[in-house]
Length: 98
Ligand SMILES: [Zn+2]
Image (cartoon, rainbow, N blue to C red; front, side):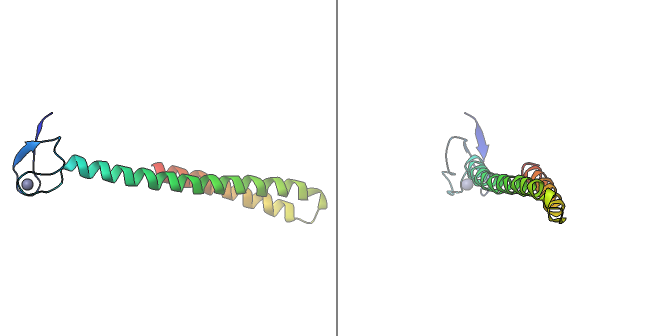
């Protein structure tokens, strides 16, 4: 336990207090915890989206490979689209954490 200074009124109080006893301003630790929690939830949600992007990309690539023997060129387009999707998924996941 240590003493911290209030952002609002500069009064010293315990860092275990959730708010300043003098003016009621929430402690920085409380604010940070709230911020991290919100950010963690956002990252989790975004990661699920990128996972879905990667999954759909793999499905597109597999469908593309199966379409290749038809010789219509559609298979190649699907494979290229799938690879682009995988790159976007990778970049997106990296962007979210970085
Ligand atoms: Zn205060």
